[in-house]
Image 1: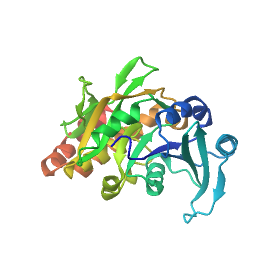
Image 2: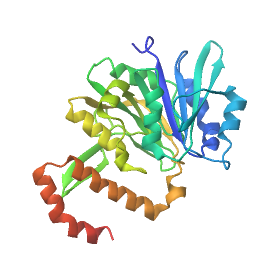
Image 3: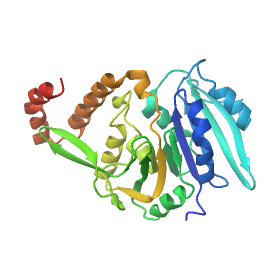
Image 4: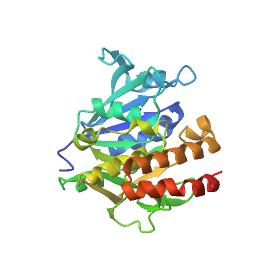
Length: 287
């Protein structure tokens, strides 16, 4: 299967041209002949020369496109016998991660989609190990082992539990292969048909955080599998723009607000009752 099926690689990005220069070479090294790369530039504006860089390196040219909220550019990458179609979408207005990723999935031509952040460099054999898991027909997503180079730690497998009226999450202590609470939107492969059945990333989590947890949660409710594959490895340098755009305090506020959205959306009756009763505790704790 790993040799016969093509993959679409999707990278949502905001003002990321400096990260393309660092990480796209590794992305192309792990891709195979006939795969496609889709980069969604999230209205970076004149401060970022993404379009010029893609024109220079991949000869992208604008093509007619039915969606009037985005510009569509098509080019290619070629090295030896490997040829990869390169698509650059430029949002007219800033959408943030979830909506930009959804747009990439909409135009992806392949059933299996490798979704990664622009600050992620996959190892050369990453796709090979991810694809092996999709021989199981009920697999929705498979997450990678992330080498968090800025911290000297590894991650990628997660746990989720309900406590004191809230769903909480943490890194799994066991990084061996198996099921995981969710597949990270920063480095995981997804089955497109299941993704579309669920409805993609829920826009209620705008601008960021918890949307990938919710996506996997919805998949599991439908009986699909969400797995962790430690042989599929990436280097994650954590240089995305949320920190610079929002600041650390605002990020904590956004994440906590979305945690409450997730809990209310997915809790059963008794969990919702607990959620309401524990709100004074969390209000004091999170001040």
